[in-house]
Image (cartoon, rainbow, N blue to C red; front, top):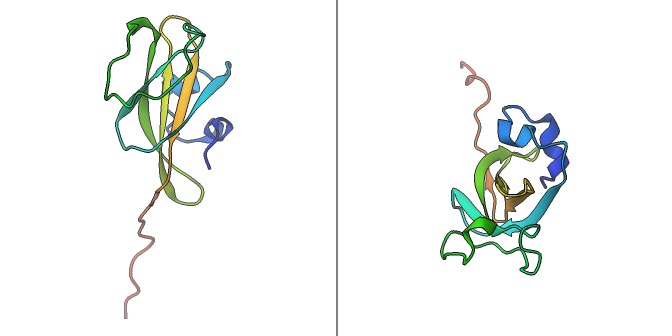
Length: 117
């Protein structure tokens, strides 16, 4: 399964993720939907409110506490497609991430040319 340290050696890593290896990433949880982005509440800006995934279906009361996590597609060593959601709080620079939960899709690949025969 993908962890935050697994990204360090990834090819084509988005610049927004690569530039944040010097700070701790806050893992939010697994997302059971296939949306392009999700929203969470920043627990540093609003410590009295627990962090939760809104999945963009509702609105949050305090706009400044929202962190939008954009989805990025990754392929694991087991050849599974996994969407990783990543975002940074604009107010305090806290880093948040989540990953897609099961079921996962297997990557379909084609290796080589068919044998002539």
